[in-house]
Image 1: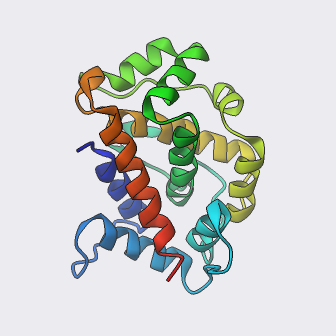
Image 2: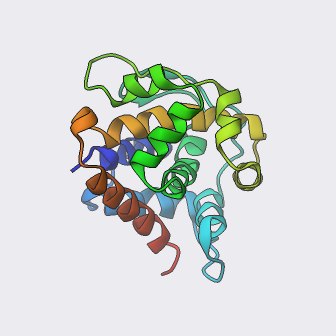
Amino acid sequence: MTNLSNIVEMLAKQALGGQQQPQQNGLGGILGGVLGQLGGQQSNTTQGGLGAILGGLLGGTQPQTQAQPRTSNSGFSGGGKTLLIAVLPLVLAWIQKQGGLQGALDKLRGQGLNSQVDDWVSTGEGANAQVDQNTVQQLFNDQDVEEVAQQAHSDKKDVYGAISQVLPEIIDSLTPQGEKTNKQEANDDIQQVLSLVSGFFKR
């Protein structure tokens, strides 16, 4: 197993303001809590895809205009916590579009991020290397980012900022054994989380 669920759980809890849901267990319960509180009853069950996920996730939230910098290797801070969890499905879907984890790593290295990728994949201690927002803009589809920005009532630059914070954490969480990590297992975990998030809006 990878550590993807740990990162998702952390982001979800922070989006809830640290509130605990004692009656809910596991990633599914925690995501149910954050999606229920953030989305309310506004999720659009007739619309599929990323738009439906983001619409339900962000419905009823207050506009987030700043994605704050990561303060440590294990957490995020500031007022952009809702935006950080909002870009999560976007980042995971992007990895899938590259053909999975290995394809995403190759794509990132092809953009000149060799040292950053090596740092994210490594099992060493310390904060993950940062990625420039301009580089992120070249990687992600502008229309997808615009969709997130509209749903979150944020500027696109703030969405790119959130992606630049979440992406290193996701790659780190997907490679707990470094280069020896089972890539297929990582891809399965990505699909599981995406299916779990999507599932809440099909109910």
